[in-house]
Image 1 (cartoon, one colour):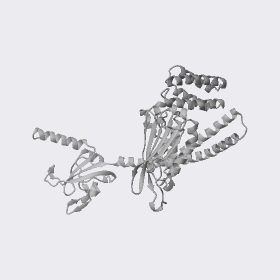
Image 2 (image 1 turned 90 degrees about the vertical axis):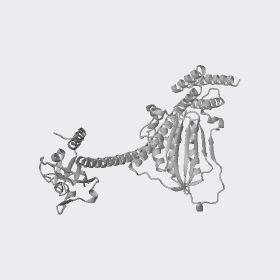
Image 3 (image 1 turned 135 degrees about the vertical axis):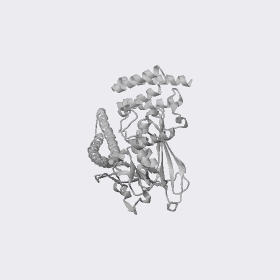
Image 4 (image 1 turned 30 degrees about the vertical axis):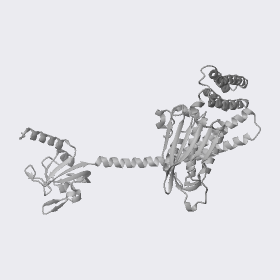
Length: 494
């Protein structure tokens, strides 16, 4: 029966619970290395029977040296966790993590003086799990390598026939074709170009996954790159009847050192996305210098559109691979969902970050920063201070910057946008280019959406007729809508 105060008894019970309840092996040993006491877990794991004599130097090789009858322990092993092997009674061993502490008082267990205490925990399963994890990682790495090589080979093989079809389609467009035949061939050419974009995205994604994408640092003309960016995207911007503004701050030098190809790829992707998801209004590209260091600078880019926007709950999907914010987006606009994932990786590789601010139905602003190096001043030719680079496409005015005014029925901006889209709509109807006519009819329908009855109904009927490809009815309904818009304009001006 336990003797002592109630506090002593409670402490002893807690000690006994900890000593016997743990799966760790605990040994109290004397100065000559004899185990004075150990818990039941130690007996079970080492194969000894309770009461059998156990010597620390026989089970723990760290305690193997004996000097004049005293156990010797390496100083670096005292009061620190270390990994070693512990031996069973049958001389087999397994790995453990152990800690030895020396007790310099006159503590006794079972009547014998205690020199130290050792706590050892088996790490056999942990080591096995680590080996399996390494093996699994190697397997995954090899599988990824094989997948990337397969994707690269397949996409390369796909590009050849697609380029061939596109070349034949372009050759056909130079021949005498009927209106219907030309529209079909143009559609084939458009599909081939989209296919090439998809193939290029998959190739870039595979290279990034394989770590084969590298960022180069070469001197290039920054202003010429921005000018080329505008010209590359100008045809599709004009085709959709959008406005484009591109501004580069005057404190950015004309020549910098960086990866022109990858920066162009990022900007082209963001700009083409802005065009794809914007049917009415404008797109603005702004570039400023956000940080100036002795040898390098940080450039901050903003691509702003007045398109469909993104819901707050969907933003986290934007930069993930093979992801788009809505399944309906893929059906209507196409795409693999890889473009922004690639953009994010490229921006990170160029020392920057990318972010998005957007509101559903009110456009989006993509912003990112990159680091570029300065051209050595000794290599520069004498340059006069340049003016701010600014490019306007579509006769943009200061009033156009208010996107909400474009959709406010009867406002000057709204009337101007309606007239612009109506002119393009009638041209497409006359040419029987029904795909483009439908896009402009949809724009007109959005621009008059605040009119609950007359204009909205007429615009909807016209779009339905355009979708059917009925030329005579479409022209008749176009004239009716045009007259109704003129009446609305008179009312607004009076």
